[in-house]
Length: 489
Image (cartoon, rainbow, N blue to C red; front, top):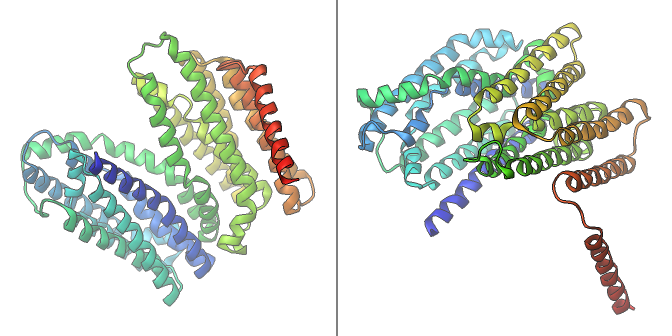
């Protein structure tokens, strides 16, 4: 138990590092580099992330789940061969496409930087999968330490390189350092040495498992980074730098929050038929918590990030309250895309999950067409948000008709918060510039009103609020204040 808790705490630290270090890198690079160089640096990191997601063959997962042999040395040697082959192919493809990528992002001067990034991708093949295999035995800390060292080496190298020579090559050296750190750390912490080998049964099993993941990887890459690729291509690296700062900050903790909430709720729907008495009540709880989390997240981003981002990243990354409000609405909608997720996952309804993915791709395509006609980040975000609002309303209809969610609650959970954010959007667009105090006051009023709205939702759809208990709580609070005042006097 003690070792499990230790591994779990290190794994939590690794997850926090994967959120905190990229944010720190972006803040410091935005400060050190010109906006053009920062945009090129973002494109370099984005491209290597895109190919890693797109060509995900599931080899690290196979290192945990292999069943064709009980001999980990034999399994890992074969998986290392597959990993190195994949890395060589990905790296070679990137190096061959370097001139095209430079033209795509309108940065011909960075051609050799894209070549080096391809070489870095090849080096990933020398990482030791033993740290992944250890998780098969519930030993998580070697993988966690490896992840932390990747982020630490990347961040420190980027900062030092940008301080010595403030240009986009800082990102290249940071990527190289992260991959070298990953290779060294994984080999030091693995229980088995890095070896190449071949076992047909292991290879066949890993290939059969990994092949379906490749198209899914391309879809995931398009969803997670497609907007930034489009902005860099259509609007240039200056716009890419600006867009990445704002949207990168907006979405950084969102994935971790959604994973936590989904993992929390999936078990309550597992092994229960759709007509089980608990399903409807748990659907109501999930709808409330997801919508409330999304609303508070959007409010925090709109009213805190608007004045904070220029202080952290510099005046060049100042966004209008209108754009920040629009992104806040987009964040809320992206959270609510997950409305069917726990029930659909528990029931094995992959078609519904795929439907949500298709809607996301369509929304991105709509935004792309709009931005090609009127080249502007504001137009791109407006079109993206409008398309996703329509999509999430359709998703709301689907969960009501197919999964038994309460129609009235789903309508409240979607329309009420969107109306509140719409008020902020209208105020930022049509009213004179706000002072900082007025901006915070507006945020406070709407947030308090939103919380009251969710209290009504909980009263109607989950558990009725008891007036007697509420009066007792208020009376107790007032009595405590009276006693405290008397003691002070």
